[in-house]
Image 1: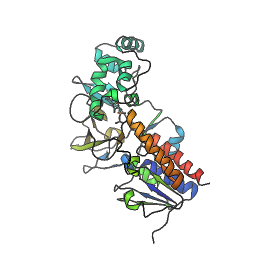
Image 2 (image 1 turned 30 degrees about the vertical axis):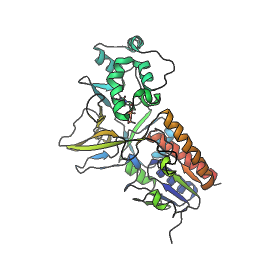
Image 3 (image 1 turned 45 degrees about the horizontal axis):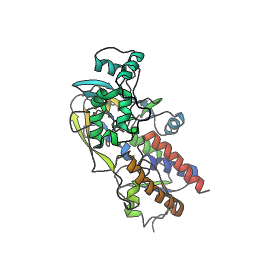
Image 4 (image 1 turned 135 degrees about the horizontal axis):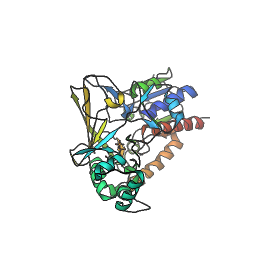
Length: 372
Ligand code: UDP
């Protein structure tokens, strides 16, 4: 007879791991985590490449958060190293600091800027709009046409195969515009990378006697066989759970090629963006972030595609409307069968790892409260 579990957890990514850890530790529930892939950690999965270099298999994860409680929680499972998240953009034949800051503006316009001078300059070139409705209007209202076309338009077309005017403003809004010389990619207070990598961290998190993991197992294989005593957490794509009955939600994926070089470093920083050249959007040398010492290095090149595993939901109004229809079904399924939907794929939301972990902690709490 199959062993019975209190909770079935579909997906061994950040959300599945956090929820299992919480349910096992706080509630004493036995948990079975399944994943169709042959590893845990979802898209945070990192591994050693044949060259011995630690790589991020599904694209770079620059962990950051503004919440000390979240760092404290994760510190149970990992030590940290500082996050060295520096990005440059290759445009007009030069490498510019990116996001746009005073140094970028100086290099672009061939003069120096104080913060006030930069404000004044952008005020002259931006296209005023108090209420931008999409990513194009958002960027134009901040930096004007020339910078938009140099840094954003081509990258966004390549990344999404959609025009920025058809994407929510939150997409390009992810990128700050700075009136200082801060060259870091993100603004968050805590910018830290797990010292031994993400896979190690999530592995430690679920290393518990009440948690079993079954890899190479899809939800379809178990959905009629494994009936948990208390609840199910589903972290896969929501449209797949419901048999695509309202049609498919679009998911953007990445085709990533890893190339080894026999030198310690190839690039000046972890990431170079190519808004206007190449089929790939960016080249990533994750060694700059992992801090690994090695005579070799590996660069990954990301080509966006509509095929392959879902990486990004596509933030646009019609997709949000379609998701809403699925979410109604999810709500009914939750009430009828105690199935919980959480994470980037199940909620069709473009969140970062820290936000996914916060969402997972909330979902776990909800599952525990509902079981009282
Ligand atoms: N973006 C851009 N130019 C860049 C980098 C980003 O126009 O050089 C836009 C693009 O639309 C992208 C979005 O900003 O999808 C968010 O970028 P981010 O680097 O946060 O994307 P992620 O790392 O999540 O792929």
